[in-house]
Image (tube, rainbow, N blue to C red):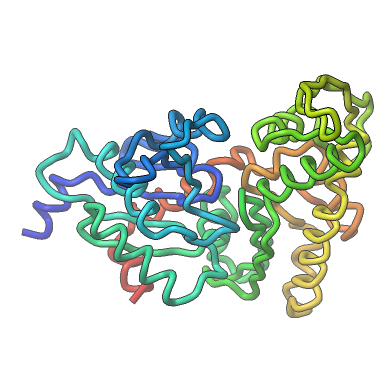
Length: 338
């Protein structure tokens, strides 16, 4: 009977991220990537939209609707809304396989508590999963980018997500050392928002800040610096205002966050056993997550550590691809989870 259930259901892996949720279907690959946002009516809590449609409502909703990001700094800030979001993704992924509920692998930040882990597991079960395996994001990212984690040598992964940056050293399929810091894409956006207000008395929204980060954000000097038009509201006059900012300014705005990330990497390297440290001299550091796409961040980390630093081939999908690998050997990883 178990074998028949496995055949009839479509197992899925979920990267439950602060900024985006990605879904991997066994035998199909990544089938969904949508923002981790839910829009609800304030009075009834009835869902208006989930994912991309809900994100477009951020900062633009009427008084009776609120667009919520239920994941904050890598942890669940609103369990009820997270369950709604999980249900949406699970049902959408499994809608063509209605015979049996799917088995689900969920990647979670390594720093969450046991209570939070149980809450995620229970939410996924209530959202329609048959069984749930939780795995730490750094391990999933390392598997997803193809690091040889099963070998008796060190691999170092730095996963920069929307809410957290996870640093881990892995050997023999186990995490030797890991550290999570609550700095990621959301903090980068906040840095930019605060800088624009401080430097220009210009108030901008989080979507505009994200635009600046993506289009001209950098961590190390560029060969040719960039300029971008910014529209916002003048904090003094209260009127719409347009101005131009440079990539040097955005780099300055993000500098403290970049320094905090390199500090965590330094701490991990100091805690690494000497035998494994030698491996990292040649293997270097691999960057994953959306934050890895910021221009020249690998150069800044390499400059700060003296180690080679590489960007994963598909950093945005590193974690969810790792959950896909776990789905291929679900029973083994389920035992590891127990």
